[in-house]
Length: 341
Ligand code: G4F
Image 1 (cartoon, protein in one colour):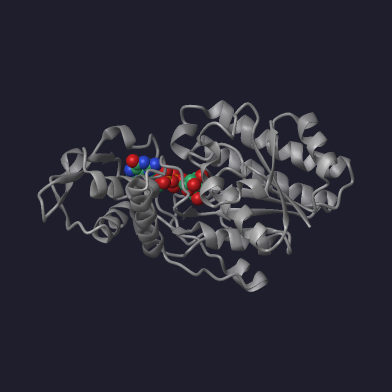
Image 2: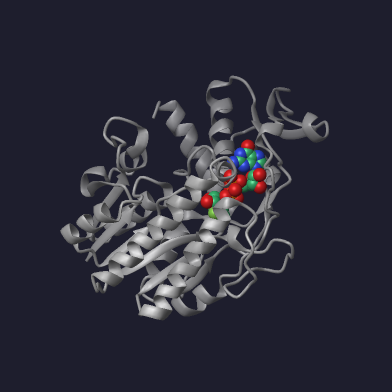
């Protein structure tokens, strides 16, 4: 089968490509047109996973329907995975127009192409837990009230509705994964888990200044990105909308403690509010300070997801908890820094 991964250079795209290639499948991967994947950092994940030469890489401007259709006609994929777009919630307040335009136009372009060319192609779209109403704390599933609090969440709610409408109105085999937070050593460094793992590893291997975080008492339902990639492969076989989550809430503070201990520090906290610091009780060195800069205008309160639908209809099972994932991330970052990767 031929698989087209839109956004193959990102965390989820590269892990999905690795899995499919391992299963002997043919993978076409797109990266953002205008970026030279060969001469900058864009393809670092594919390089590290040693799969860059095993993928047919294509530049794509997903907002240009004609460009997308040429690619589809050239490769005639059996399954398309839309994993590209703006994914940083914090940034979406600064760039609401481009967040909405990119995430929504790309969805329409894919759906309209499949419909108008009468294709039998299955398509997976990534949506987000940021679509849910966070004024109540019940565990969220596919039937929970949806009312996003930020431009990113609004764009992902539109993705969810468009996919559902095209599936129900036109019978397309299209699906949405409503992703809660998911992490791996291949996460970008602007997301909090990787920011912690990278900086703890840096402080362990080469020292240097402390790093800053925002609100460390925020909680999220965090999972392993590899488990979600397994979920994507099951979902495309049973088109629908599915929540992917761990069903547990963990604070940023607790992940910082776990990461620091795993690296051999003895993390302790002192001070309050913006003056709070995390230090290593063995050496007295300050590891982390708080900065107002990383506080969000509106921060979605921690919501928990319920993946029962996915588990019951596809047999999906999570294999790792977030503490195990953050420890793996720290180990990988220590190796990268030691080996100057
Ligand atoms: O790691 P984060 O930036 O992830 P966030 O905003 O929850 O979004 C991620 O998960 C969503 C749900 O799956 C996705 F839709 C989205 O695309 C993305 O993958 O922040 C997690 C929490 C927030 O409460 C944030 O305020 O950590 C808090 N935090 C505290 N200090 C920080 C920091 N977040 C970041 N990025 N940087 C900090 O210094």
